[in-house]
Length: 153
Length: 228
Ligand SMILES: Nc1nc2c(ncn2[C@@H]2O[C@H](COP(=O)(O)OP(=O)(O)OP(=O)(O)O)[C@@H](O)[C@H]2O)c(=O)[nH]1
Ligand SMILES: [Mg+2]
Ligand SMILES: [Zn+2]
Image (tube, rainbow over all chains, first blue to last red; front, top):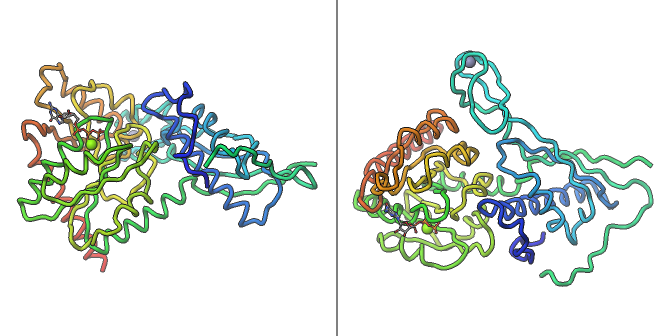
């Protein structure tokens, strides 16, 4: 796995997103490449990956645009290089302690029960940050993209 | 030819979660209560922790700390002034601590020498939330200088926290901090979350914080012995 500390793109304008969030998405993208690679190895899969499908909850604290930007950097010279990142967004949902109604929250706030108007603490959806599936090129095809970038440590 | 689909269904941060789980088990085994302290940069984590650790030590407890920063050993030195062991974790360009960094930092510490471990996270309101460090308690430090609506702007971090500290309250009046509004905003992001008002500078709220921590540690110990 490539180390995040080795990334050379620190002067990119995206870095100025609030509180360095791109660095956050970059480390998440790096973790994603690692679990995807492990899954490929476990399955004995040697074909190139074309699509990486993930699920991201509204409360996962991930800026999807930043993750998409970080994806190209994190996948460089890996089994996932050139693969398209497909993101399914999951809205937050809370369950009311009083009436047990589940309310889907539009955006990250507020957590209020739609039925009785009480604040609801019990989060039942929205924290997802999951790798769902990988699509691999079937049949004889190009071998995994070769890595020519020698600038990276 | 249609693509072949490999179903995976696994958490992206699986590695971190596994290491954190192992750390949590190890902490429990040594009876160590662990607190992850998060905030924006410069919110006053180090100053508050130095005072809190001094107080806990005077009460006969044995606190220790590990502290993450992008660069410099300054914060570990400042925390050592409390007379308690403190170790620096240099994260380079990493904007948060991950479980493996904490695991490495604990090398050379005998966990039986301590009963409370503070982990001062890298100053950042976005990144630390996704990374479990094996802690028992996640504490968010929220200084009055940042305005009352910070909890609404960063709801996801506060949502994973067990305790919120309003910090630098000695200058609350000077900066026109509306404490009640800030409390309401915190409650929106995390209904029912406990809040303690503190000032490291004026030594306010440190005792209440120490009591809360000791209380929560006792509850954890009791639960652990009930399980056996
Ligand atoms: N007025 C006032 N200033 C404080 C207080 N606590 C800390 N400060 C000041 O706030 C600044 C930052 O304090 P630190 O304790 O270094 O904050 P930190 O959260 O550890 O900072 P990083 O580790 O760099 O993220 C310093 O100049 C402190 O003197 C307080 O209770 N009141
Ligand atoms: Mg500090
Ligand atoms: Zn309800």
